[in-house]
Image (cartoon, rainbow, N blue to C red):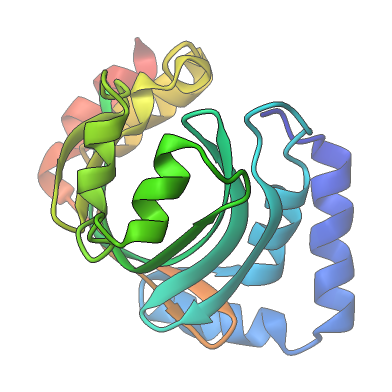
Length: 214
């Protein structure tokens, strides 16, 4: 998904103008080594997803610290599901050839919009334990490449298996340069902010410089 740069800048400007205390809050979070992203910015980015056969619809999110609560209508096995879940980020690992995101999917709820389909019948029967959403992968046959591992409510994703991200040379170079000197510690919500904690890795400066030159 390509987000128009000018529209993103205008959205950020409008958010700051309508929330004059946002800069101060972001600065305070910055002193704590936390990158602060307003959830309004995340909502705006989600709204830019172009419509399509498999695109999510009616997407909304809100903070449920430390996680995010998502509600959306999604495509699954030829059906449309009204779904909601709380996502908590357990770990993030960066590298030139990987972008690993470990998630916990909690409080999952799903309702099929098309009755008399296999997934609708399974959901209606209660046979599928939504407390362990990884079980839903058993209905998909082949696991999507982006899902490295899944068990219970824990999902390990490699976002660089998404073709548009994998083939983005600028992103790959940024990851190769940043990963040796920049470690992510936490990803959580607080108020209406998404906070990304980070720490410097001084021992990786040489590797980062080599990646930047390359």
